[in-house]
Length: 112
Image 1 (cartoon, rainbow, N blue to C red):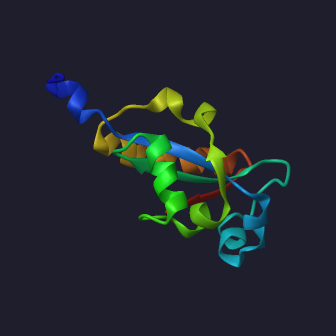
Image 2: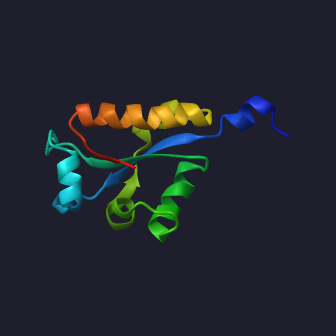
């Protein structure tokens, strides 16, 4: 059995690249008034699963965000791996902070 500390620190944030077609969605456009067209559109989430498994569930329609289901292309581990794993509260905070940081950097961001 793993030590208690590592059991509590099994949450992750993750970033999914979305197809540029998501920009045609009025709700996405409205949420990203400062989007820079050269940057990717992304979804930022948190999970208690491995990010790969969570992405697969999104694409299979299991507890899926519609934008990831319809437009999800791939995970972008270069934007999140350095933060994982973490405790639940840390993942909740990091999900919001990461989304804000990416939006400020010009990304088109959806964060549920």
